[in-house]
Image 1 (spheres, rainbow, N blue to C red):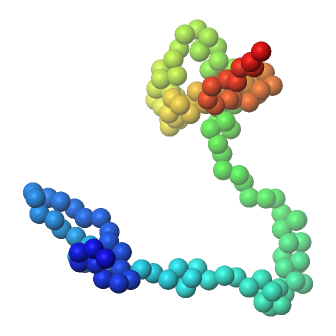
Image 2 (image 1 turned 90 degrees about the vertical axis):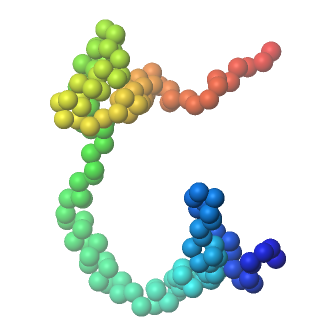
Image 3 (image 1 turned 135 degrees about the horizontal axis):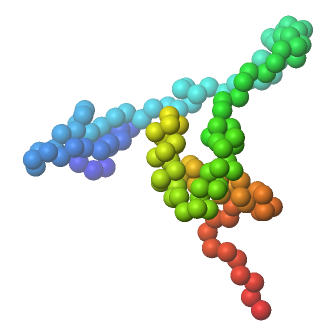
Length: 140
C-alpha cells in the first residue's frame, strides 16, 4: 500500500491551488458494496404475487384509448418546409445561414441538426443509408 492508504479505501482526485493540495477526507473514500445498492429482482416471487386479472383489465382499458402522443422530433417540424429548404440549399444558402433564419423565426436548431436531417432524407430518397468512415474499395 502507498502512503496514507488504509485497507478497503480508494484514492480519489485532488485539487491543487497555489502549490497547496486540497483533498476531501484526505483523498480517501471507502469502497461501497454494490450488491446492496442494486438488488436483483426475483421474477418468480414477483409472478406469484402479481394479480394477472387486474393487469389484463388494465391492458384492456389501454387498448380502448389512444396512445400518448410521441414527442415531436426535428423531422416532424421541418417536413412541411423540407422542399423549400432544399431549394434554398441548391441556390447556395449555407446550413449556418438557414439555421440563423430558422432560429430568428423561433425554431431552435443547430446547423448540424439541419444538415443531418436533410442528408438523411436525401440518402433515404436514393435508397441508401448514411455511411460513416471511409468507403470500402474492392481490390482486384
